[in-house]
Image (cartoon, rainbow, N blue to C red; front, side):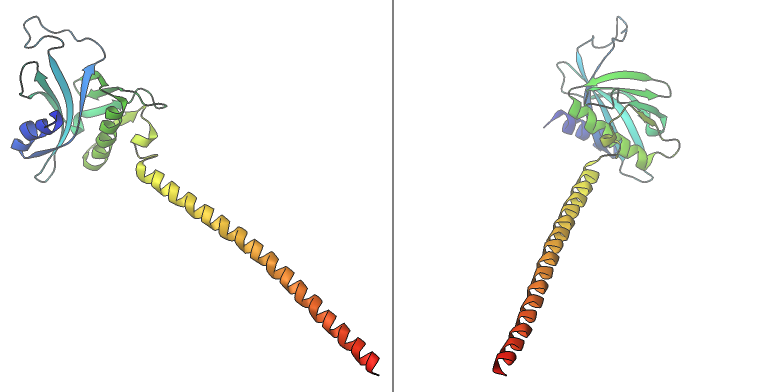
Length: 210
């Protein structure tokens, strides 16, 4: 079982929740840790998870989950409601990168995901979830690629591909129609020429007969 599947089963399912997304992260900047804090720096893995309750009205949470070295257990460390999320910063809107920031009412964290792909998937699901479930002010998504916010999503790309195919087919039909039109014009010209030739031949035949 993967870590993310285990987190869903152990942390969220018992509370009648469903995990929508999770990304393993590390801090971009070092955070001061008290000398007696449980688990030293680098002694644990951190996951940022998005979950929703199965019961209605639905409540969405963003939870920081940790797994300490030498333990198979997952522990909730911090949790916020989706309405406490103020800003998601994708760092660079022009290229895929693994870095992103999350700003809440009372917290601000700078993260780097395991890969740019994991970060992109997480932000895309988080944005969709915010649009669907945020009851009050929706969080601001800044420095994020348009493909993550619906500007150039997979569905849009598919629609663009279909539109392009239709345009190409239409163009091909128009060109074919033009070719057929030219062929019809040539045929008509040939028929007119043949008709004129037949009339001329008949006149000549009548002349010689007389």
